[in-house]
Amino acid sequence: MSFPTIRMRRLRRTPALRELVNDVRISPSQLVYPVFVDENATTPIPITSMPGYNRLPVKQVVDVVGEAVEQEVKAVMLFGIPAKKDDVGSGAYAAEGVVQKAIRKLKSQFGAELVVIGDVCLCEYTSHGHCGVINNGTVENDATLELLQKTAISQAHAGVDMVAPSAMMDGQVQTIREGLDDEGFDQTAIMSYAVKYSSSFYGPFREAAESTPQYGNRKSYQMSYGSQREALREAELDVAEGADIIMVKPALSYMDIISCVKSAFNVPVAAYNVSGEYSMVKAAAEKGWIDEGSVALEILAGIKRAGADLIITYFAKDVKTWLNQK
Ligand code: PBG
Image 1 (cartoon, rainbow, N blue to C red):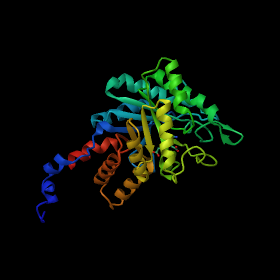
Image 2: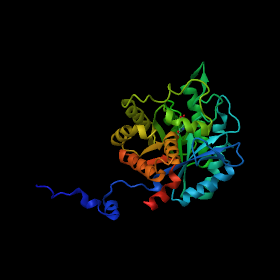
Image 3: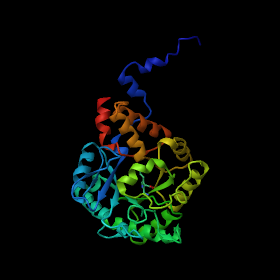
Image 4: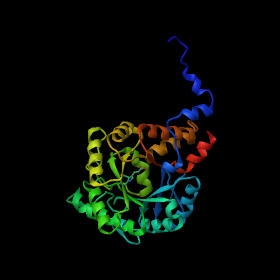
């Protein structure tokens, strides 16, 4: 075949042609909008390292989520900052805890229109900032499981659609599944943070949630970024324990992991486009070095191409506007 019989540029000629043949699309309905609810706040408190993001009082959650729903977002993930932290993270599983209150409000306002997901972890609720209970200086796995189970059950009582355990304790998915089923919540889904790396990209989130460990780090429970093999084992275990959706986190430095997990398992794969990944874009855009919207859409398309079915992203609310500007 002699050149130029095949001309790749034929299908790139117009926007309509390009759209017609694209094999990856971003839709706000596949994005999850994270929300921080702060029990101490009376007005929105800006998160300095995450421009455009606030910690919200419970009474404003419905309004802010309503703006996201207007933009065709259909899922939110809730993180709570309790009025008081203690050694065992009691605020995480209090019947009248800040997340439980927000869940009730959101479900009564939006019903089936909105998927409400609760992050299940202790780090925002413990005085030491670790994701589990401490015994003799280490985060104790099995004692923590019970508390994660209580947290999931209390969120289910409040009406949550899905729980998302993020503590990286071994056996957390199975313990939570059993706990939910025993209480009659067999329809409450589990999206497990199956493949969660110990990452410096979580920095801004920890400011937002006031959850920086007071000593040490999370490397004895979150994964080491030097390993790809371990990702498949973590995912395999969580699928076996009953996870309905498995998540890879962070996203951008872990595109290979998203791709491996996607091809190895037959469950929906979520990717978490984390706080540091958001803040970097915001900071460069504020300096006028990049265009926020087009860079964000390109990043989200990349995460989808890698194999993510759904994406948790702080950009969720703006995506529809940016797509319309394209
Ligand atoms: C709680 C949790 C963290 C994030 C989500 N759930 C922080 C951490 O593990 O330190 C990070 C999210 C982000 O950076 O956007 N365990």
